[in-house]
Image (cartoon, rainbow, N blue to C red):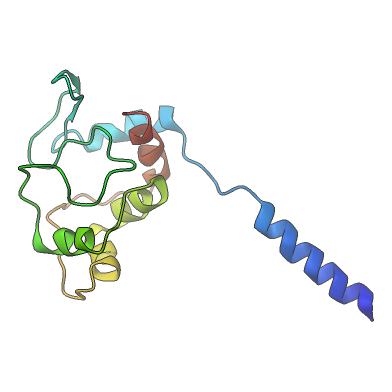
Length: 137
């Protein structure tokens, strides 16, 4: 009777060791074209790496940056509440956020009525965009 228990344990441990699917930065560069109508990617020297709109915050260095932390950007209340919780953007969080920003805020801000100012939703390609943004640092 030990064999089934050992097999179950071995299977469970092997599942933990499987790599998490990562995004493709090259594909993300193409998907990002949907984002640049509102977001720019400007490095600290002021060089526009991806010229875009100024409606959303600059996405240079977003991976690893605290949520809602770009100086002088006027964030909405929901994202400010999420930022106040100490959240830091990583690729997985960005991929989840872009699928449905308001839903993400509901789950992460502590305010079930939080709404996002970001109207774009990316039901596909979020992991790729996140991988692309991770290269922008």
